[in-house]
Length: 137
Image 1 (cartoon, rainbow, N blue to C red):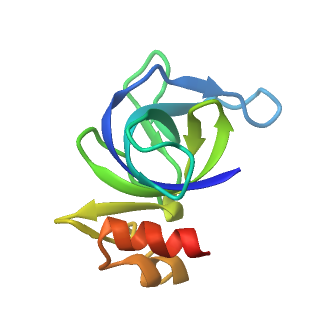
Image 2 (spheres, rainbow, N blue to C red; image 1 turned 180 degrees about the vertical axis):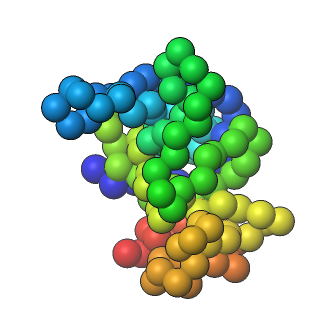
């Protein structure tokens, strides 16, 4: 299921690693962020706290930060519009191009993804306008 919602990152959860390839490569860390939902097209419900997973993070047992190309790390205190896939109960994931920062009360394009149709359509709108637009899709 795809969900569209706005929320503030209020903390982090326990990350995990996922093995890719045939097991010969280093596992890829997945960071977990706790997001309080401020507006939604349906689910998740406004006021709930959900987990949003992001590929990348600090490698287990080290201090090396890994991010996928074209992505920026989410941060506690930041607000975003998420167009996310539901991966489990109260757990979502959103690609770099589907995670729109909210700055000064307006939606902005994700860094490096400014020319996409979604970025052009949502950038400059208020979060409420963006959620309304996404709900109509």
